[in-house]
Image (cartoon, rainbow, N blue to C red; front, side, top):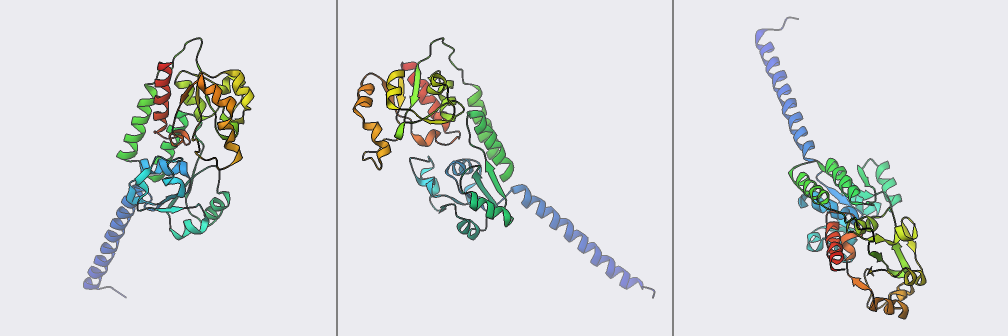
Length: 288
């Protein structure tokens, strides 16, 4: 049946309006997508700190419950007004996130459930050196939407790292971070990397081990560190594992060894704040 001019004109206008509507809908969708996820949830204390640095606070729905623990995190009052989670799938799902950020260790059941349900999950690896910190910042920035904030934070961090000069003296002072139960970090760890950048020989290189290791107090007394850091010292030991920090032999060693305090929150996790730990060690190196 022939279509008269009036009906054709009306039909054309409807199609045109529909096309224009689709165009602007697509444009708006692209704009929204370029802004990145708007409901970000972090379930790990290490990713808490990176998320807080790179994402606007109004896009952060929740951080882990350790975000306000001063011994584990430097975020302080930043967490005010945010939901703090314990990393359970039920908690996270109830928050309706469009991005969940965590590390490659811990909360495996939660991560598995979230992925099966289709929630976007970003798992960042453990930072074992300052280059890893930069890599994690870039990975997170890509996931949340790279912008002026992320570029400024990453650029400043990379500039500070590249400006560091490592002393190359033939005989370097020995630094040891010795914590509860004799736990210490060797090669292939953030603690080791930062100490070496500050111009120290490390216990990892001296005893030739990687990662974490329990070192007996007798061995610590034998290697005679020039600088020692004891981590957080409990005023009242919560467990027998911390009794080694009060051992008379260690107390005697401390009388002839320089003791330094580096807040755990600075380098428990790799972040731009880890540079503060580096600067503390550099000052101690100069004093030695």
